[in-house]
Structure formats: structure tokens, C-alpha cells
Length: 183
Image (tube, rainbow, N blue to C red; front, side):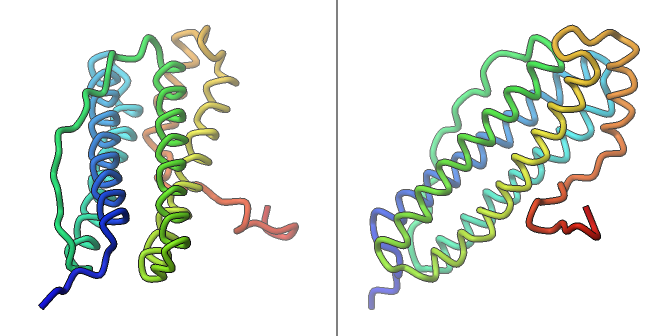
């Protein structure tokens, strides 16, 4: 009896996204290691936590593929690329990576809608919200770095930023969650 409830195109797209999430975990892991080596323990801790979060995203997709009766295909993860040149460069790269990931998720949402696979469409809504949080968080970090001096931030500003990121929550406040009474 056939138990697969994913089309070949959606199964392939979800497997590809699973690999994207694993690659993003590697990016965060590489950048966290770089930050730690540079003495930015707060930034490193923040990035290590996000590496774990990306691995959790990967597992969430893997489990979904299995529960829909499709085959999980584990493939090679691309290299995270060169180390960042600076803290500013690090978070610019993080933001770029998150925007690319959002685009990939939107493609799966579009595919699931076109195929009328409402289970997958519903499943992907969690990722849509998560990517909104990830992009907002990355933008907030870029704003902090900009205030600290951007690419020209001095050691004192980076020290304060590092201490601040050690305390920064892993979630961002989203626009849809605020109001005039609760900005």
C-alpha cells in the first residue's frame, strides 16, 4: 500500500529545505566559532544558540517528511564559506542568509498552495512566522551594530555590543504583535 502523501516535487523541495536548514546551522556554527576565537563570547553564545535553532528546524522538516510517508534524502551540506571580516560583516552575512532562507520557504508555500497540499501549506506557516522573526532579529542586530559604528565600530563599542548580545533574547518582537498600547 502506498502511504506517501507528498508529491515528488514537494518531497524534493522539502528535502532541499532540510539541507538549507542544516547549511544555515553550519553558517551559524562557523560564525560562532569565529566570534569566540576573536574574544566575542556574547556574540559567539548568541550564534551558537542560533546554530542549534537551525538544526531544530532541519529536524522539524525531516520529521514532517517522514510523517507524510515520503523519503528523506540526506545530502552534502555546502561549506559556510570564509570567515567574516568583522562583526558588521558577520551580521550582514547572517541577514543575507536569512533572507535567502525566507525565499526558499516562500517557494515551498507557493508550491503547496498550487498543489492544494493544505497539510504542507499549514506546516510551512510555522516557518513563515519563524523567518519573519529571524529577519527582524537580524535587522535589529544590524541596527545595533550601525549605532556602534558599523564596519568602523571601535573596540569599546564592540565590547558593549558583545555584552549586550550575551543577554539578547533569541526571539524578536514582530510588527503584527505590537499595538499603540504595546509598541
